[in-house]
Length: 285
Image (tube, rainbow, N blue to C red):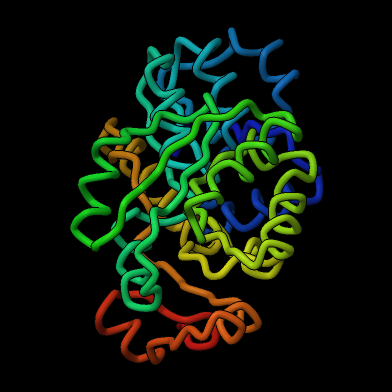
């Protein structure tokens, strides 16, 4: 692998060092792997070659790379599918991605099995996502649910007003991976509001479960990196990119306090694995 892989980020140095180290262990020894902050990447974008790859961490880095790069390829990681679909049309070079969160159908499968209140499910999202509301409605209908959508500005006051509004006829918020919506402590504000109103949210990550969402279906870093390596290898050997997708191995975690307080009966770990292809947090190889 002679091309350079640039890990474009705006995260903490310790986090990106850990990510780069884990990635390096999965790639050939002669791989040139270079972490670079977004600002420095912009200054040196003219040095990119046709076979170089930009691995962008998060939606902001992906948006930036797509806006400035005209050589190489971009693979976005730690990004929601709807975030990716919003930014991808801005790219003039080959792109792929490894999504955070989980496919809508997987999440609705679990919800259908444990949540018998058929009030509408609220979906709040920002202008930073591409959301096909009709497609989501059609899929929800297959599981006996209805979605109610509300697009919101991302400042704290607007988000909390939107949450209060949708909770008038919904008991549950069905979240999408939306970096702009949940930044700057807004996620914690939403969770506190829901706790006081005794209503719940389906989170996009394990962190949301620990903080107070009912459950989440997600992939860990190891699964994301494995999917990333598959795309890097295909680009290196074939000159093509695999399509953007979720990792194959997905986990599901439940918030034990909320499960008990809402009288939810959970499927067994073996049933989750056999029926839905999901491993529980306590039983995942």
